[in-house]
Length: 410
Image (cartoon, rainbow, N blue to C red; front, side, top):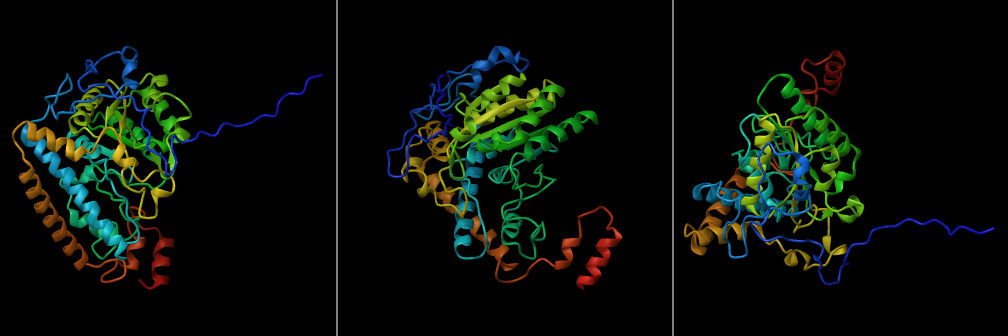
């Protein structure tokens, strides 16, 4: 009689630990312009390979090449770069404010600015995003007031959400920005449901869902793909693969599969991967997916290959789980520098103009910060009224809440 060997579990290990040399050898990067652009009404089965490649437009020389290029004018590209620069300056000022005790918490977008800023330009008024906490560029690129964003971060008297949300968890129906949930993956099922409701109403508005690589392991992610594929919901399913889920590397959520985009193939959903640090590529892929949704061709799943250059949040120390120099080694570079170089190659920008733009944008951000702080910060100045907690819960306040408000004396 033989004795079976004891069972064991496999626990994935990152390629490198703190103190080691950064290793991105697993990121296979095709040449810019090498990935074909399919027709909008393409059969998903015929483009399965796009779930394993990376769509790129900008090459190493700063030139825009290939079938996905040529969709934005020089003026639109300059505006897009200013949006990214504004988001980066906004991040830097709010990070300092958190360290100064003016707010309890903050989350940066460092290295990921192109994704949300470019994607927003592909949408139309009335479309709805269901974002995570790292898509503030959707608001910046749509002209949402920075003062309002800062007041929400400070939870002061002018906080649009009246202190009822964590800092950075914005909300704006007018700007197509659904209230952020800190419990990630809820965005997927909500976006699919919203898109289905829009179709049921015979409306023309589409939805966009946002999720990080780690949250694709949640059950909501898979449930959303079932409904989106079954009913051909007019929705774009975005996965921001920034290599890290807080301190957990992507291999834990991927389970050893090829790519995150490949998960859409089992549902018959067209699935693409795009260089998330290439503003032009992000816009082109977003525009393609948006048109599919508007033409009733169903959902598209897009994986943005990028890198979270900063900490997960102000509560995180990335040096505890990855090499300090890892962000410098990321092979797809910095999205702002890449777009700047492209505009210089086209002869419509220069290093001098870039420095001037940085100074102008910083002045604008600082002015907005001063105004926001005049209404109060976490430990100083005006605060939302305790009475506000009872408003906005129901369309009509029920008797038991009225009684509670009276008992609270507010």
